Amino acid sequence: MGNKPRLFCDFDNTLVQTTSAFCSVYSQIYKNHPDYKTPNYKAVNKWDFGDELPLLKGVKEVEEIFGMKELFNNLELINHNTYDILKELSNKYEIILISIGSFSNIKHKTIWVDNNLPFITEAMFLVNKNCKMDKSLLNAIGEGNIFIDDVESNLNSVTTVERKICFGDIKSWNENWQGERTFNWTDIANKLL
Image 1 (cartoon, rainbow, N blue to C red):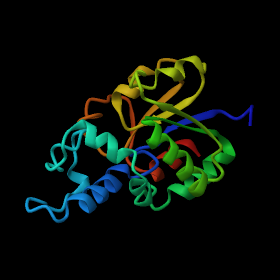
Image 2 (image 1 turned 90 degrees about the vertical axis):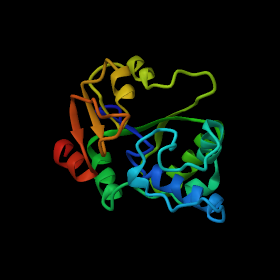
Image 3 (image 1 turned 30 degrees about the horizontal axis):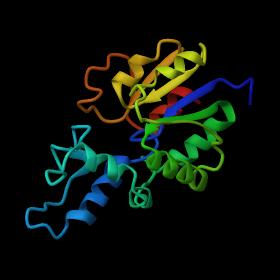
């Protein structure tokens, strides 16, 4: 493993469809509310879901849902071929997942990865209590790595990687990204395999 190039990969909305799972949990919670409308996860364009999930009671509830086991029960890989491409990439790269979340969120992510991506054995999962909400910790790793994330500020916070790739649909959190971009895992495979 030590001589493979390292591929750092974000978890939420890069490997897995977190927004879709979040909307499913929201629907479970609010389906009987008189003002409930079925959310369209593809229309979410705010990190706090306020544009598409109007019944949420602020950031605290968003954080609570991100830490719920039910979110991970609804979690699926972002594309139908993500597993196969990740497995193939793991032959060429040392894949290291990187994510920031609450203690409960990180606990469930670790279990989810262990159960669904057994060939990925390394991660940098940080509990976000008073930590910086970016991925600048990668700067301590050294140069020559690849970093894939869907959030522009995370990509910009890392200065020592050789290659940064913005993943996924254009959203408010990455709309100004001027660098390399992929929209799915087939794009990633075409670039990295």
